[in-house]
Image (cartoon, rainbow, N blue to C red):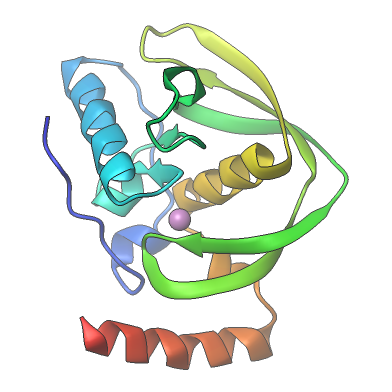
Amino acid sequence: MALLEIITIGHPTLSTRALPVKDINQEIVELARNMVETMHRAPGIGLAAPQVNVSLRLITIDLSVGENRDDLIVMVNPEIIETEGEQVGEEGCLSVPGIYEKVARPSRILVRGHNLNGQEINLEASDLLARVFCHEIDHLDGKLFVDRLSPLKRRLVRSRIKKELDKT
Ligand code: NI
């Protein structure tokens, strides 16, 4: 296994719509494994392939950050097929270091995708898990959580991001 480099806001891959995974081959399985390790190490509760500069529709989620194996979700070509309600909560992103802002998301979603064995998964998620799914699937559509803020807020955040990135 290997740790992957996480790219940050401003990198073109983060604003590109990712392509569907056509074939779950050894390369994809290995990428998913490395993404899980990278997510755990960061540490983070979700990671999308575009964040490691691979423009494919693959996400990993683990609300327990490696504490509970049953919490680990790896989903290929995930799709939100139903949403319900609204929740507002703070989000951050490994690709947008140092920035945390409130974002509105559905409170409950239905997600469909495939696992690494090629089996279809249908999953109902609410609260934080629903939020993370929405956040990660946004990455696959070339969208960051800061893109969902009001124009004024986005301007303020942009100048803070510039300062953060200058530090690194
Ligand atoms: Ni993110």
